[in-house]
Image 1 (cartoon, rainbow, N blue to C red):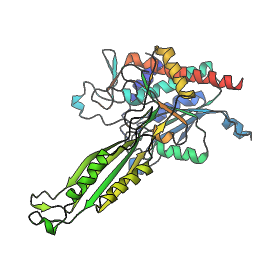
Image 2 (cartoon, rainbow, N blue to C red; image 1 turned 120 degrees about the vertical axis):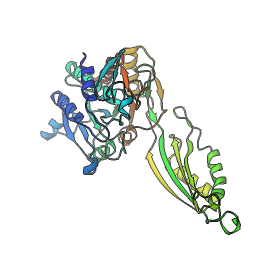
Image 3 (cartoon, rainbow, N blue to C red; image 1 turned 90 degrees about the horizontal axis):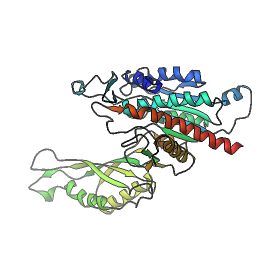
Length: 398
């Protein structure tokens, strides 16, 4: 059994249903400390929903600082991920217990196998192998791990990023181990993600008897022309990396349940998935302009789940592309499709963020699994990326 597979199975066996970590971070810290990583817990949240966070960094700066030396300008690579998993669902529907790693037909089964305990194990083993051959790399290395990615994502990476910002920590490159591949590890990486913003729109009217509409004001009727315009609006054209911004209604709630009552209000839930051609502020402004022009009486509550981010081809993308090519022979596809990830928080303080991990076909499903044949190549891609960055940084300082 390979070291990566062994560590993956150890992590799967820990039932870390969000926001529980179930000992994953302790296991990982035990593996990182002998490599010279200083492991710091930055747990956050209320006692009944405590989120476990780990910031582990390997840097000669700690020794330099202890000696009173000037802060260096070394680049920093961060591996980021989450130890929490979604609930397994009905246990009777699983072919084997979700937290007992099992092998069948060349696949490893267990909750978190794809999302994303294999990636975390591959991070660690890639670092072990890289540091054996390059004990003094030309850049610093860190890991940011949380147990709050599958949940509210309030006390996990978001909190750690804010603390790192306040400290003035430098982050140059970040690889998030999300399962981004489609058919084979390395065939797709995410070099950006759309932003997400939700709105809860309440349109007010006057409740009354449906036989006397002149004595009431139907908020559904009043909202419909504005909603039609919002649905037809072209918010932007997208760009070379992103599709156009999308506005979608998810829920409409109106009426008392009686067939002879005009309701007093209607509530519309909607969501934007927006690209870097628009901002949350510009989209909010345009929505309010449309509603105001239609003269509806309304209130609107906004929730910004995350801003869009984009890493254009450069140092990190090129290093990962070369690593994938050398390991698999694939020319990887750059993509910004899909939902959001913790990359949206990290991108606030890190200029180059990409996501790269194993195939995602079984994530969040019953019988989640990963092909065993994908595990070692994933680890090797991470190690080769480290080697690529080492060559780049060495050339810069030569």
